[in-house]
Image (cartoon, chains in turn purple, cyan, green, blue):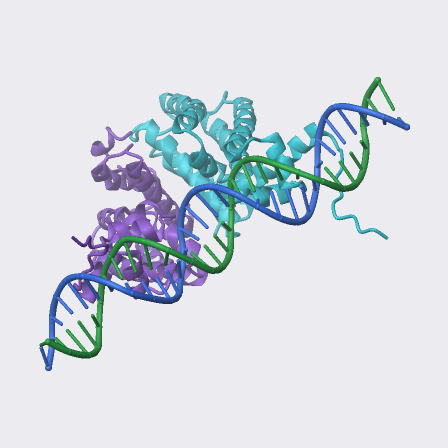
Length: 206
Length: 206
DNA sequence: ATGATCTTGAACATTCTTGTTCGATTTAGG
DNA sequence: CCTAAATCGAACAAGAATGTTCAAGATCAT
């Protein structure tokens, strides 16, 4: 009896590429230092196959990031920003939260193997969108005007990232993240004399 | 003339240990993944000497963290928390900012080589202090009461860490960090109908 | 069925980091 | 002056990760 040392399959090339991209996204989102071996194993694919589709680690990460950026931008672009600025902000936070949960620490992985310039451009577009919304709310008298808008955007991203970290650490249920972020931002944005809307669901947070 | 391939010195053991601890602190604060080689070079010391004083990487990191925690706790313990809660918070933020700038990403390095239990205990004490201050301010009517205190503390730490990252990235001057954090927290904490104090210096931030 | 395509594990070279060993050298202290 | 402590660079072994090569097996289209 001859033992079969290898059991290769033919499968579909495009299908495998998808598997690898999916697995790489999920794996790198949790651990930006994950090895190629881990990613290949998660994709249910040999390491050689992976290298057959992606020249090296940098190329793979770049492909993952490109796909994630496309998806993120589409998600955020679809958010309805009309109507009451506070409600619009909550919708935008909800969408941002989903994207952050999905892609987590992928930014860190990107920073380690990609030129910094590419990343900066990726951040500018959604950032400008948030800025416009905040400016609109400020002009409409719904948001306070005594803090610089750019700092507010930075704060929002920071708080979002912190919430995601809490979720990964098991400190915060994933479905409470958006509520916590929204409450914080609305608390920060609502000017003196106005009521901060919808804080009730935050009572139980950590 | 005989070339001297090695030029060892006797020096003082305690002195070298100090150099190594200082260099390790500074190096790991910027790059938590810094190699032993980098640390030894930064300390102006051979790698062998370093291993002579610290059994392995874990022991070195533990020593660095222990020293940093002692220093941090002392700095934060000395902050005067009496008087107006808002002013006290600004003082506390200032002290926290200095500590964060000094020790930066050292937490990350610690998380990679130390048992998680040690870190948790280290965070609890200063955290409880901030919580007490916020509760006091809330009871005194100076801080808003519609956001959970524990979430506010998390937000404050998060914003502080974000500001430090901005400084390391060269986006924010180090001396504007505390002002930015204070403005954000006071904006978040000041209840409707009260004026947020001291926001003028924030106009130029990022 | 036959050839092109895709996959496989095993094995290998390379590089990096950790940690150790060694002989040689300097210096503080008695 | 002499010894013990402390240092040095160089060299080595071990381990992990990256990337390549190879021969063998599976599958699809024609």
